[in-house]
Image (tube, rainbow, N blue to C red; front, side, top):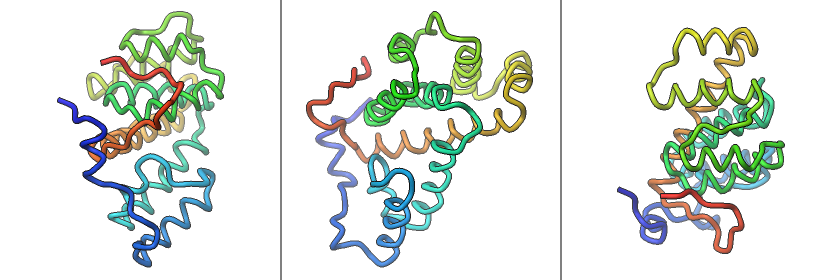
Length: 192
């Protein structure tokens, strides 16, 4: 069961900067000074727990900007999480980043429709299959683990797991807070 974005947005609406506590001001400044340059998505909700927000934003900065996986592969994993959680804002934000990273729109479309994309590169297929299997079964087979380890090493595996976990937390936050997709978005939305 999902809640309409208009209704859910009232749960954790953005806090006006004039109302921020010193701790909230500090973490907001950390986030804005980093590579994101702003506080999109879950950050206004996370301000309600400044210590958690600070820790999460650092993990997110690594998962998005410093992971050992190439950006297009990382974005496949993030789109799979967004689809798995039906997180509309996450899909909106990362669809655009995936396209900028060079991911084929047909790959994103297949993910949106919960299908295995055709025509993926070997690396894309490997990351897709690892992430999908982990999200669906809560584990991965020895075969996909060994393929990933051979190609991306143990660091690549751990970075992928970390990215998936971080974006699960983001997706949960966005869904509970009801963060809406901006009106008039041209990004293809998630089908029901």
